[in-house]
Length: 174
Image 1 (spheres, rainbow, N blue to C red):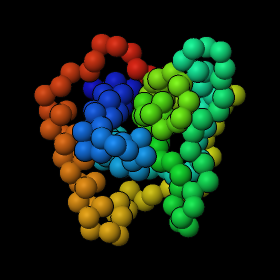
Image 2: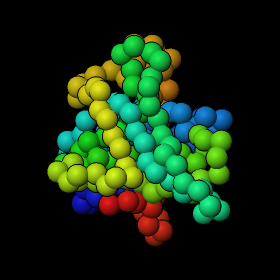
Image 3: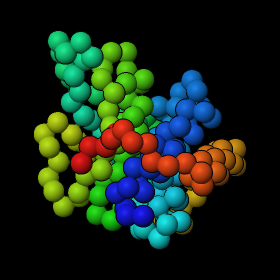
């Protein structure tokens, strides 16, 4: 399977898995999603790096009357980022955008998975600012409970991937 197709398929799978495991706040679990996506891509022999930093995207309101930047920025905890995504095969792969409409108090449109070439300048409506990169063998967390939850997310994704086809609706921005 090619990288683009698998990245999107795996992104949609972890989106469903996070919604199942964290129904109240799946949109605030991008670190779980990024680590799961990186793991799934590596399982298919694609290189993948988890990147942390700030993220913003200009998003219209559902009624079309207004638009504003929304995203994640300015983590309050030292050594952590406010948002996590994956860089793989020369692309930014970010499926946390699928949750953005649930993490804001404004009624904004749903967004697709971002799959953007790193070599190309980002459009003016999309901003990423990396502040950290996780080594390939980095532990998800030093807290055992968090590591166990992260492993359960990956296992759930692997189970879903073993029997699911890619949805026909295009949910990607590239």
